[in-house]
Length: 125
Image (cartoon, rainbow, N blue to C red; front, side, top):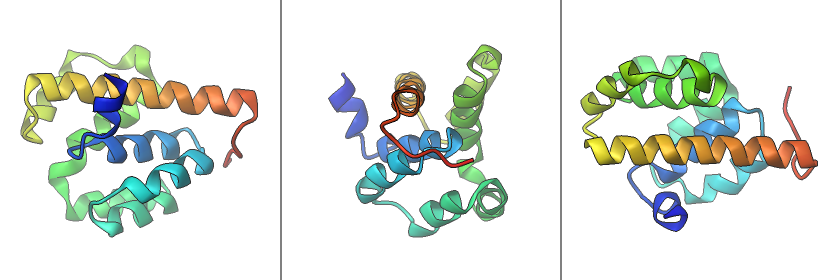
């Protein structure tokens, strides 16, 4: 299952990049960057921080629901609710894809935090 989620071209690398950036893990971000096959502007804006990502999202509003869901799940999993699932349908994800996205997001976020805690990555503050 992990292999399937991580290699899913639909959102695997994008979610991994988002969680790495949200958790402040440039090492994890750099590890996933070669797997990103989408728009290069996304990755460069994401690397620059929240303000640059917000600017990119203004030009790509269809991605807002995905980015918002991943960031919320990464930052505050206890605040994540079913209300965040509905907008993912607007991103043209099936219910199964949305669940897979959330599982992958949670797993990536957890792995980032574990690597940071173990000292296996440099952390950006």
